[in-house]
Length: 128
Image (tube, rainbow, N blue to C red; front, side):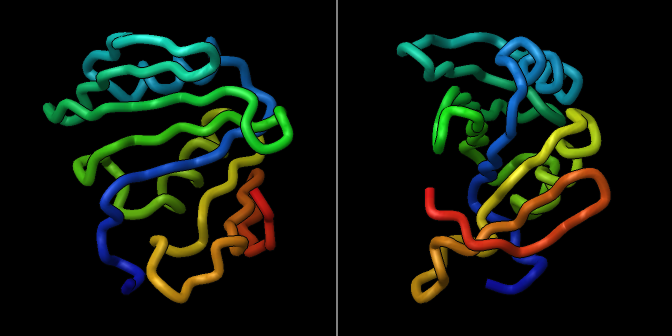
């Protein structure tokens, strides 16, 4: 995958932030955010961002329980790749964010991730 090729979806992992705080951040990005349904610690939303309906899933307490996953199931997000979203989230939520280093292309290392915190962006190995 080339650096500027748009990812088909966006997923980031947010450290130590409540569902309420994450939801407020999402609301700041959207024209509207509607809760669709919940299944335990998995929350489904429909977000309207730049006029596009985007399914969003928030999964609390994943990978060591300190992490919350947010998955934007669309290629119509404001971000070209996961790292773009992660950098914005790290700034606006003031916490560590992680995202996969590649676009899940065959042959990529599934344990290679970006770690973003404040202005630091570094590749790490993270077994999820």
